[in-house]
Image (tube, rainbow, N blue to C red; front, side, top):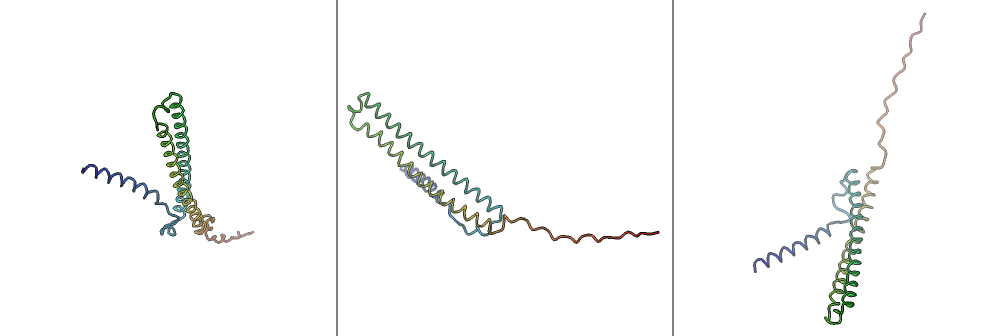
Amino acid sequence: MNRIIIVGVAVAALFSGSAASAQGLQVSYATDASMDCTAVAAESARMDQLVFDANAKIGKADGSAQGAGLASTVAVEGLARSGMLGRVPGVGMFANQAANMAKQRAAQVRAQAESDIQVATTRKALMVGLYSGKGCDAPAQPAAAAPPPAETTAPTGA
């Protein structure tokens, strides 16, 4: 009984931890204004990487959903050709249900990734504004010019 409770708590912590990390990205933070140019550029690059990773998640989820649909079709076709589909009632339902679960999971992953892309894109726009507002793109101001050396005239003599 004690082990069941521990396992339940561990599973709950696992799921809540993944949800908390997924919700960790915000458009702005209180410390954004105090970032220097290097930190703003690094954060902007991190947002680009987050968008890339989210797009990869979408592609992977779509691929797994298509694969599950294909596997379900092949399984049901194999069951029909072997005669098992007619002999064992409901066996095709399990293959279809597994494919539907994979499609639902892919839709959830897609929705979360699209949300991450939207937040990361908005945050990147904020970082670009901060970068420009701080004058990070401005060329360095030249140092105060030193006065030219005074010309000395050489004595001409005879």
